Length: 120
Image (cartoon, rainbow, N blue to C red):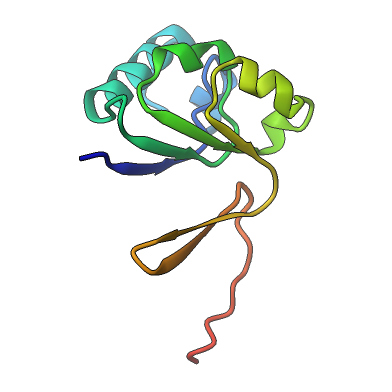
């Protein structure tokens, strides 16, 4: 049975993200190898992954398991959807994207926004 995963901000091949996010790696190569290995240790090719932007080096898509739906972030602003599909993303969406899962609507986007809870 396939699983669904949600992730964002891999920043593959982004050296400065190690310092910006205090990631526990010495080099970008070490970081990328760990991210890819960790991803593939839990995601199978049958699984669906919703990546909420700032993927990083798009060529690395080919090394990652799963059907990847990319909800674009600011990293992807200068890329056309056509270019992103060429890297192997299964779907590409911009802005807010919603799915219905087990009767619940899940809305995803790269930039967080304030959502008022109407129950209060």
